[in-house]
Structure formats: C-alpha cells, structure tokens
Image 1 (tube, rainbow, N blue to C red):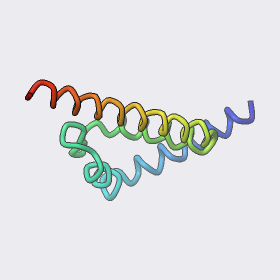
Image 2 (image 1 turned 135 degrees about the horizontal axis):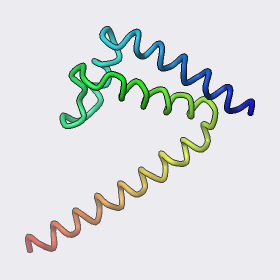
Image 3 (image 1 turned 45 degrees about the vertical axis):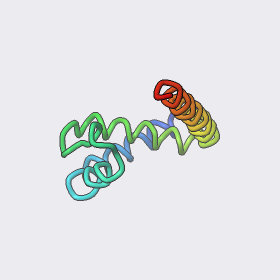
Length: 93
C-alpha cells in the first residue's frame, strides 16, 4: 500500500507541474524529441501530461522495471531494423 501511495503522490505532482509548465517548456521539449507524426504542436495536452506522469511515477517507484523494459524494447527494435534491412536487400537483388 505504501508503494501505491508514493506512486499516486508522484503521479499527481508530476502531472501538476507538467500541466503548469506545458506552454513554456514541456510542449516544446516534446516536439524537439518526437518524430513529426507524434509532435504535440500544443495539442493533446492532457494525454501527454498523463503519459508523462505515469512514466515518471513508475520510474520513481520501480526504476529497475523501467530499465529492463527499455533494454528489451531496444533489443526488439534492433532486431526488427536488422530484419527490415535484410529483407530490403533481398527484394532489391
């Protein structure tokens, strides 16, 4: 129960501060990092604030789990990129 309470408190604080600073810094920061398809352009404020709050709170409470998920996703992405490159070479030859 304690971990859940810490997570909820972290979620609320991160959501509050991200929402408060959306126009001044958060939206521009996201737009710099994201590909064109996912850019916020100031829209979808509450969706992005909630997503950032969930990720931030989970990272604070369970950092090892987040790290393992990121490593797993990176490995899967690398494998998919290599397979796509290999398949592209097979199609062109």
